[in-house]
Amino acid sequence: MSGQVSGQVPAHGAEDDQDGAPPGREAGLLVYLLLGIALGIVFIKGEVASWFRIQEMFRFQSVFMYGVIGTAVTVGVATTLLMKRRSTRAMRGGPIDWPDAGAARPTTRHMLGGTVFGLGWGLAGACPGPIYALLGSGLPVFGVGLLAAVAGAWMYGWARPHLPH
Image (cartoon, rainbow, N blue to C red; front, side, top):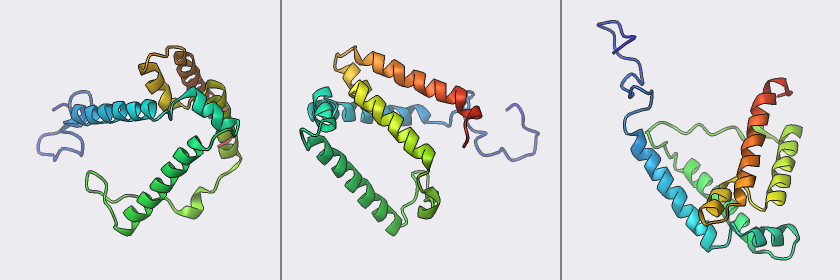
């Protein structure tokens, strides 16, 4: 119990493991890993991660991906509204801090970031999430896309202190 003076109540998180992780964190991470694998299988079997489907979408040759994206947005909005209406609490019991709708209006940086993301998605043929599913399905060429995404994130982290925020 390093850092504690005898007689003091331990601070929140003092019961954490030696590496600073809360107890049971590994089990929680395993759940996320399994959910990610299941979602990856759905992406592959449903052709949501298919390079050909994504190219069809960007060339306006098929409405399949627009239907998938539209359904995801509809489910997300409906779920968020339901959670707000029912005052749903976070998994650990605390309240969910919903941002004020007027406080998060898109600015130029959001438009530029979305454009860069869209260009990368169009060039690679996959956004970052399905890249893992595509790699797992035996398409190693998407490793190049993953490396490019990691390099882009690293470059942003390096340049962030110099960018206007």
